[in-house]
Length: 186
Image 1 (cartoon, rainbow, N blue to C red):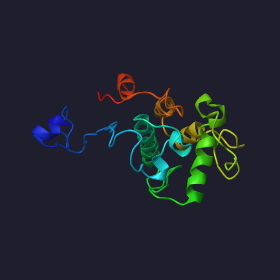
Image 2 (spheres, rainbow, N blue to C red):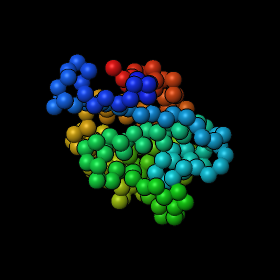
Image 3 (cartoon, rainbow, N blue to C red):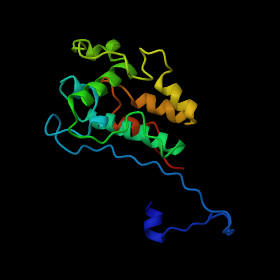
Image 4 (cartoon, rainbow, N blue to C red):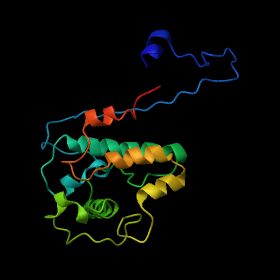
């Protein structure tokens, strides 16, 4: 992007002067920064809230990694069909109790929170597996399989799965994500 800023955007392949062959640019955007002090203030829209928020656990900047992962999840889906809403697509910030319960059900099913030690002491009594599609406890395929079936490259799905750690104490840090090299541009 620095070259674009300094030299302006040139829509031509630098190796070829043929204007019929436009330059293809692959861009990966990432915002892994925190916008507020941990454990304070109103948290982002329902879709981007991490499981620890729903279950009243203490939260840290690891919630940003979760939110970024969900946003990236949507971007991958949009590459395939921009008009198709993502699995977790919603920008509702306040949300009704019903919407909150549905997101908890989705997290619980899709990420199998029952089996995650960090969430063992959580109250799941109001949360049932029914009505949530693509969860680990349902008869449908796993969300990773659905993404591959949609045509999302497997290496993207593998990366997404790696950063999709429901346990915030085991979630990859910003440095670890950057160290994978996945976001590097060649």
